[in-house]
Image (cartoon, rainbow, N blue to C red):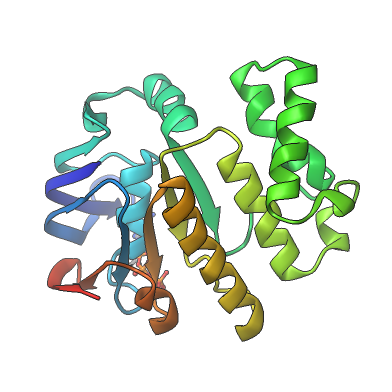
Length: 229
Ligand SMILES: Nc1ncnc2c1ncn2[C@@H]1O[C@H](COP(=O)(O)OP(=O)(O)OP(=O)(O)O)[C@@H](O)[C@H]1O
């Protein structure tokens, strides 16, 4: 489902003439099979977020290939990647990334607007999704009027609304207390088991890594360990 081949990335900082190259990732190769939950673990600064940004197409690697669902996405330009992203990838972030001036309903509906779905269909699908995450009664609440766990559920509903086969998650439980974290991890497992959604999750939390089928450990931008959980 996701194949990463010999990925290398570095950032260039500083003004012209005085530039410094910061090597961040080197020789990264791994696959994520359909229906798997794969976690990427590693200390702060080991390159986890950079790796996820590369897979998401927000940045372009200096070397290497990324294939997602049979498409060599490293060959896509920005516009084509944006189109690919909306059809194939859902995102969950630590900070939820909800739009504060929009209600739960409007936040979940937004990807359907971007996809050009008509209003009646949008209403129907958004309500189904809010019900699925147990928040139909909260549809008119703004993010600031919801708990952290509820906000994360809204963000999951928004990720799921376009039926993505793959969800990329960046520290999904990072802002949640332990009880809410457990609920969310159960929910991720349910989505994986019952909906067949494939997950690539970056985390430094052992509890999150435990729900994965495989754990890939990064250190200083390289894969040092890959284990079945
Ligand atoms: N835009 C950028 N420009 C320059 N350096 C960057 C940039 N983004 C990240 N880096 C550097 O790349 C390295 C890896 O950062 P990255 O955010 O990928 O690590 P991480 O494992 O996700 O860390 P954390 O767990 O703290 O989020 C760090 O040394 C960081 O300073």
